[in-house]
Image (cartoon, rainbow, N blue to C red):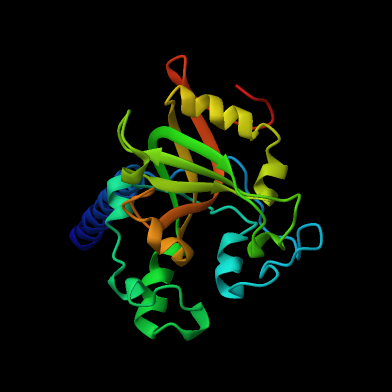
Amino acid sequence: MKDEGGRMKNKKILIGAALLVAIVIVFYLLLHQSSTKVIEPSHYIGTAPNDFHGIPPEGIGGDPELNKEKNRWAASAVFIPLTISQIISLPHDALDLMGKERRSRWTSSAIDQAAINENRGVQLVGYLAHAKESGSEACNGKSDTYHDFHIWITEFPGQNKNKGIVVEATPFWKEQFPGWQLHTFEKLADQNAKVRVSGWILWDEEHGDEVGKSRGSLWEVHPFTKFEVFSGGKWVELGADTI
């Protein structure tokens, strides 16, 4: 009877220990999940189309590898919050050495430095300083119809745009969100509106001569796949309807 009682006591101890371990694991997972600040996308396309109105992802002309990055037609599954200062401070020494060289000729160090950042979705908060429509570009098939919107976001209100970064609305994503109209972005720029932008990080080597003059970095959010405006004490998504 003593042996049986001892076995029962040991069994209860083991069950109690297992429950304690399970509680600790669940608590750790919940704590870890809240600390990573994973942000779900508002618009996700699991499979990107093969082309956009006949324009392939590699565009027509220019650097096909860069064009593919600009023409990412699927949103990131998650977005990592970064400040504009953090984006500007992302490592780029190896990329600087490449200048405007085609990506196919980049060193392995430059390729790795771009990839580690371009493979992640980010979300930033800042103030809309300026907006304009681009002309025809190789990434958009040199089309006279399908153009990007170039939008400058600064970290603080009233800052010069040469302290901020460029985020871009590409033709594919503008088609998904009809509310993304140039006059709307221009109006928000006039208001120096507080905005929140989510999308893909991109190193745009084509604009090296603009750093310090009209932008603070060659790191961009390009394309962005979600755009929100802080209005009425809350974030309002700019989507199917204009604000």
